[in-house]
Amino acid sequence: MYSILTYIVTAKIIDLVIEGFEDFVGFTIISRYSEEIEDALTTKIGVGATVYKGTKGYGSSGQQNETRIIHTIVNRIDIRKTYRLIDSIDSSAFIIEFDVNNVRGGVLRRYFNPKKQTKLASRIGTKTS
Image (cartoon, rainbow, N blue to C red; front, side, top):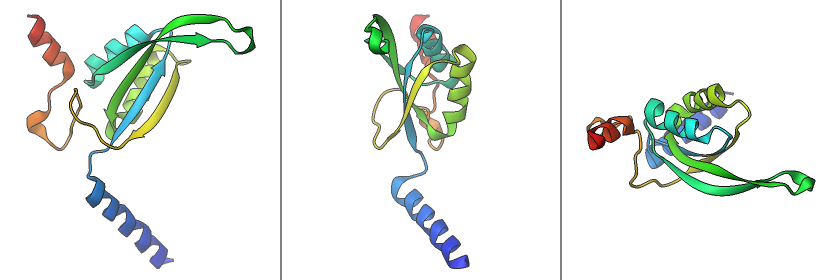
């Protein structure tokens, strides 16, 4: 029993050493309230978002409407916070979560590098004033 536990712990430690402590997760969000969600992601979580124009359809009826699709990357530490934020705005939002292997550039919230830690809302505030 202890050998299995030791194997699992060792595998996790090796994974953390190789991959690093900061792990990012991507979200694709489709909602009627996409503008409110985008604003909340920017101001409350401090991440950037890319918005695509899309078309959603309704099964066999074939009805199609234009919609906004939000694509964002958050630190794994902020996953639950992001879900709570989206649920508080639109509990019926369609959310796809996926692992992100490599991230470079953009506005990312990093926890282990305090020198680069700035929230997007503070950046926007300084540019517009």
